[in-house]
Image 1 (spheres, rainbow, N blue to C red):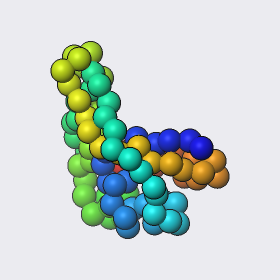
Image 2 (cartoon, rainbow, N blue to C red):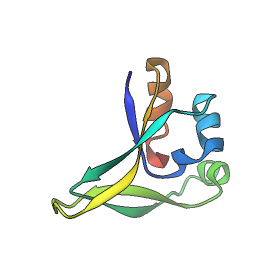
Image 3 (cartoon, helix red, strand yellow):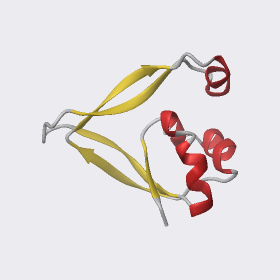
Length: 90
């Protein structure tokens, strides 16, 4: 089963339901050598759905002391295409 590392709005139950039609199972996890930042979304429909213009992103920085903590969530293969359409708000 594909796993998706969720650090942003995809942690929110309402976003999971609107994207996948169900709540996702998950476990705590972290990305090493990455840091979290913000990305400004300019698509008004996306901003309206998520209720915010700035969304979390992760950026590789190569520093072993950097961590982004969140959860990895299991998605079914049929849900992976919905996830790819939602990458900007994982």
